Structure formats: structure tokens, C-alpha cells
Image (cartoon, helix red, strand yellow):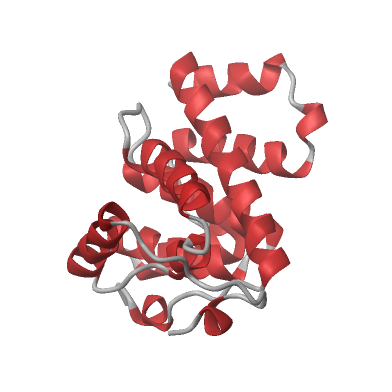
Length: 188
């Protein structure tokens, strides 16, 4: 796949370092594909590394949030922002991690119609408010998360994950980033 099929900008992939080539090979081995978001960033290895370091820490690092909860945040935020790339890729992850294709679809359309735990609903309500009205976040919003069982470290992780996906949604929109076609059929 060429860069032109991934984003609308005329950027060319830089020559990959052995470390990045190995990372792409690991993606291919584990996922069966190299996510297009990584290919999109491959025009500048420093930017790619910054993106992957942050992504891997937020989505795979130690946290009081489960992997599914983090993916749910990605989808709820991306739904507000109408991010085709992230809704497709992270909707597939929600389907896969939950084992529930309907949950993935509900999350993409409107998380409020899904059967969620009180913890999950509080987490997503906060992430969506942070996306839609960041200046209106107040102590009672943080307290609602504490009341749902989240520690302050978890609140940081919810906020950081929501913020990261707001940033990536905007980059994806600005560049017309396209998801890998394989995501559409995953975990269905």
C-alpha cells in the first residue's frame, strides 16, 4: 500500500531504521498487518517513535484500566469526533477484546445505548465531556470517577487516553487517514 492510499498528503516513507523495520515486522506477525497509522507516521521516524511510545504506554502500559476500557475510551472519543480511522481500528479492538461484536457497534454509534457497568459509564462520560467541553471539567467530575472506583492515577490515565485520541483524531481528519481494510472484518 502506498502512502497516497493511506493519507491525502504527498509524504514519502523514510528509510526505516532496523529497529522500526523490526517493529513493523512484529506488527505484521502479531496483528497480520502494519496499522496504517504507523505507515502514515513513517515519513519521519522521530515522530513515529514519539507516537508509538505514547500509544504503547497509554494503551498497553501498567494501568488500573483494562485494555478493553482503554479501547472503549478510544472509541467513545473517536465517535464524538467522527474519526473514521479510529472508529474502524479501535471498534475492531473493542469487538475483539470484549468478544461482543454488538458492543463494538454500539460503542461506535453511541456508547450510551450499550449495557455498561457503572464504572465504564462514568469513565466514558468523563472522556466524552473532556472531548466536548474540556473547560467545564470540575471537581465533581473527578469525584464521580472516584465514586465509581477509580483511583487518581486511573483518572490521569482516562484523561491522557482521551486527550491522545483527540489529538490522533485531528491528525487523521487533517490527513484523511484511511484504516486498513482488514479492520472492517475483524472480530465479527
